Image (cartoon, rainbow, N blue to C red; front, side, top):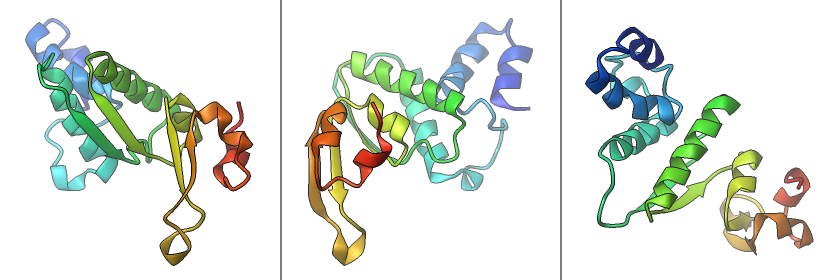
Length: 149
């Protein structure tokens, strides 16, 4: 049974649904209950940790979250769920850094940093940093051609 199916099946069991809902909220509704953690992708494992954190409620200490391509393999509908979870963290006063190639996520950012222009020895240079909607002004940016506002 998937997380989404369990939420529907156990809808009268409020405590159980409350514990499962954070998984659905971060786009993991398709994951099977009892699925072994070694079968999860890196992005799925990151989102499990995020769901666990969100499920615990408000925290006094502020946290810096680092995500490495958390949207890999996600349907756009699930990416929207993940972005809502990011919003929840930000509204609680936490900060988020995301390494991402998904242009929809890049557009959603408050601040964008592009490093490149290539990988390995041809990369590692600061190409751009600033507002996503200003990226098109960068003459060095490779990403600007794909990020349309």
